[in-house]
Image 1 (cartoon, one colour):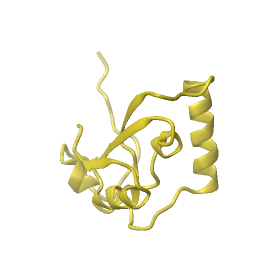
Image 2 (cartoon, helix red, strand yellow):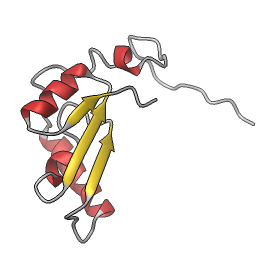
Image 3 (cartoon, one colour):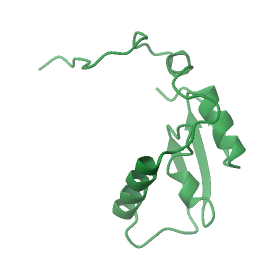
Image 4 (cartoon, one colour):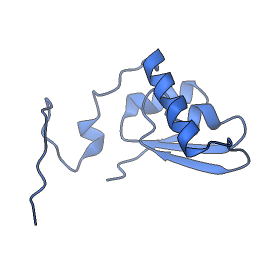
Length: 104
C-alpha cells in the first residue's frame, strides 16, 4: 500500500483542527469571482442537468462566497457548513442558513 503524501505548501501545518486552519482562509467581504461563478454553474449543470427544486440540500465546505447553495436557495431548502468563521459571516449576509463546523 502506498503512503498518502501531501503535495503543496501552506503557511499553516495541516492539522485536524480545521476551524483554526481555515481561520484566515476567507476574509469578511470576500465574493465569488466571475471564474468561480462560471465553474459553479458548470458543476451544477453536471450534477443537476435537468435542474433541481423542492429538495433539501446540505453543502459541506460552503466557503465564503456561498458555495453552490447560493444558486439553489430559491427553489430548495438549503443549509451549509464551513470551518471558517469569516465564510459563515459572508454566507449569513447573503441570507444563507449556515453553521460553523469542523466536519473532518
